[in-house]
Structures are given as structure tokens and as C-alpha cells.
Length: 191
Image (tube, rainbow, N blue to C red; front, top):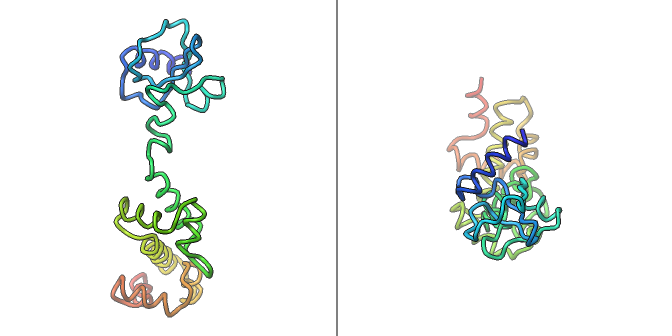
């Protein structure tokens, strides 16, 4: 398998094929530098080249990044995504860990956890998602609650708390706002 990949990588490197950009890296033994396959420099002799699957593998082998093609910013790495990678991480924290649910949770605390200011986090969310972190968290809570309403026989208070709402009153208010009906009506539709 690795041999077949090596042959494909060699052909892509010779063509400087952009479809393979970020999928493998070219290490040049004579210079100690590693590049992306699309690097515009003159191709070295094949006997001086080693192909590796990641920038981390190249660095672990003792190569340093090329200053011209900047392989550490190749596609499929966090640096290439830029601020989008930060927003994706924040989304995971909100949806999977409930980073904005419960007592003491705040956008400021989430921003500090991500190493930025609250204002900057709000700007990134607005730019990439068109919504604030609080609005995204509210949507995640509503979706969790709807799944619990449809897939369990838990009481309304228990569903509200498990979904991340601070109170049954807030749970009912958000459902009325989003679905224009109370949660009990949604549960009845399930039956």
C-alpha cells in the first residue's frame, strides 16, 4: 500500500499536482528542508527526495519547513483553515461539552479557554456562522432537547436540565419562540 502511494506521490510531485497539495510532503535530504508537492522551486534529484504523509512526520525526521511554499500551512491543516479552525473548535466545545450551558458558563469563559477575547470570538462567529456563540449554543440546546423529547420518556424538567437549560421556564420560553408551540405539543406529535 505504501509503495503504491509512493508511486502516486512521485508522479504528483513531478507534475506539481495541486490535487495532492497537503496529502504528502517532499523532504530533500541535501538541504534538510521539506516542501509541499506544489512548491515552485527547481526539482531536486529523485535520489535526494523522501516522501512523508504529514508535516509532523517531516519535522520528526529532522527537516525544517520551506520558507517559500510554507508547508506548515498546507491544505487540511489547522493553520490553512485560519480562524475557521478556532470557530470549529468552539463549536465542538459548545455542542459536545456544553461549554455555554449551566451555571458560570459564559462567552467570556469560552473565549478565554480558546485564548482570545470575548469580542474577537463574537466577531469570528458572526463572520463564519452569521450568529453569535450564544445563539449557536441556544440552537444546540434546543436540538438536544428535541431529541430527548422524541426519543425518551423523561419528564420535562429532566429534559430541560439534560439539554443544558438553566430552568424549565427558560426551556418552555425558548421552545415557544423557536417552534411556536410548547414542548409538550412536540412530545404529543411523537405519539
